[in-house]
Image (tube, rainbow, N blue to C red):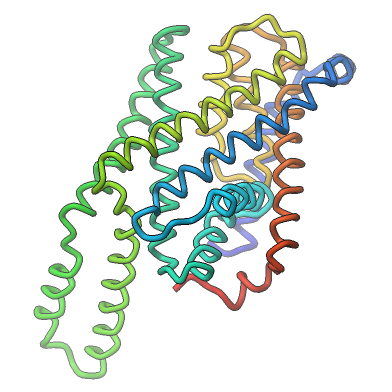
Length: 336
């Protein structure tokens, strides 16, 4: 898709969601709701955000522990910086940044690290959907929601199974060798570039699959999953803190739906900082409990702003401390 057309589509999707978010909204009520938040909760929120993202740093540390021992004092701010870049830049730029930075600093294949980062997304999906299914079957047994959640769960568990089979029964070398043997009849002008492409594909795929190596170690894998649950429980706590700041009389279950809906909504293509789908996901979760739309928007704005400011400050400190410039990674240090 051409960049201009792609950007138009992203803007259109965002505009549609923003319309759904703000249609029939009482803006005076929304402003009053935001003004009435208890300030102490705003002071607690950044601490919870930093803890949740630090646990993500611990997850990353464990997932690549069989290749390199990254100190938590590096992996935690690195993951927070990656989260900030994912918010403000398109195409999961933060994930790519983590792969490039880790590969350069610790002399590891960047494709392998990218594979590990992609495995994180699978673990995220498994944990999020586990929380969502728990919330649906315990608190809100909506048949349609159950079917959609089960379908999503099958996709993520299927991805996990694929990764497990790929790392345990890696047949990339055999497949590439078979293709090379069967293509020996090709003319020399075609054969040479084709073989070069085949060898590149072989190397890249093997490096990517090497990023799943944690799946070979049950103890490390189990600990990693525990830390992923800790990440998302603190993500729930972030919203619970904000919800309590608005004096909403709801229990912990509402945060399970908020976090799950947001995670799924953020998979929808949109402009940077996920404006539109993010707010609509919170509204959908609040609607389950028949809570005001204005309160849902206020909660989403405050929580998202808290995450943006907190991660941006830590990312800026990380870049300054390590003398990192964006152009160093956008041009000179491509993943290859």
